[in-house]
Length: 278
Image (cartoon, rainbow, N blue to C red; front, side, top):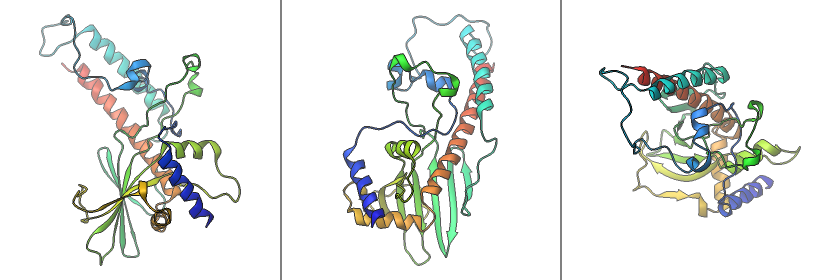
């Protein structure tokens, strides 16, 4: 009963609160390119690919490609940035998931697959856009030592697909990590005898054709924002019985953070090669 009441309070808080809190920490933070883009007005939007320039840059040669002093400085910066990122990389490989999950990778997309008593459970997530934005701080308190810098954690939305042999369709859950729950979990922990709060939530539930990559809009979708708390509680227990619980969610963020960092370093290396190419 306490568990149900606890989840009801969490669901009510999620509905009434619209102000995001700072994300949990899981990785060191030198990411200079990303950090610089979050200072001042630049934090409001991504850099534009095309910007107006008063004049063309000075050509350093009449080769097949354009080379400028800016390109040279950019390449030097990328070399230093790659070294720093590799220095703080916690895992050269990807951490293992407990519970017998098999990992399949396709670039930035990952699938975790597990068979349980004839059922097949598939978790799909993508590390693109999985880093929550940094909240703006008081300028007087922005000067921090490297040890005090916030760490980066990847908290991707993930889809859980449960397939049963005798069922015509799969039951599919669209889940995400509320930033306020991550902050509370990181800062307060849980007292002895206190119910552990859920660090992820179910956003939508629907029946979908097995294995479909696209969510069919013609299938009825249950949104949990207006859902009876008792039904929501049973849905969370349904996932927990199949190994999708807080322990799984913690391990998923560790895996996602390592994969996102790996892909980020690879992107920097590809960018460096592109800038230097002639």
